[in-house]
Image: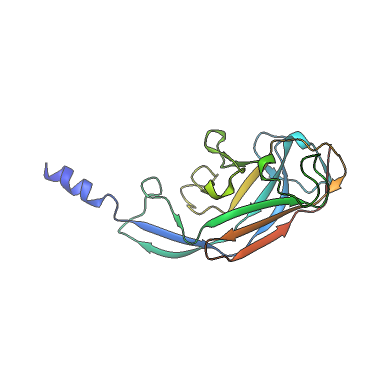
Length: 180
């Protein structure tokens, strides 16, 4: 009985916090199954995605040991909103400059635990399913997969703007890409 009390007394005594410090975005393709960065200027719209490189920085660590499965890293001042737009008309419902969030799906590294970007304020970016977890408990990147094909195949640039709860903003754009 004393053994079980001592084991349970260790639970929950750990905490790891981080903040995101910057953002850069790149075009990705899923042609080999998982999204990976692709520097081509013409990609399949069915396999297209945007990778947000997030640059997390550890702010505090408490506890005798750290088990990321028991208590995952906590993002301090996480993202409140994610906005994705394009410089060209996407389809009849989405002219240039309008919000394209409903056309993308947040891929957490596991297809079961992803989420639609329709309401970006409900998306929690995590490292739990990324390669390298648990050695790296911070989400270094997040992938957004295109789930709605554009009606016009012209070259376009996608813009991503992230707004944190303290209203700090990060923004970047992809290189020009033609989706076929």
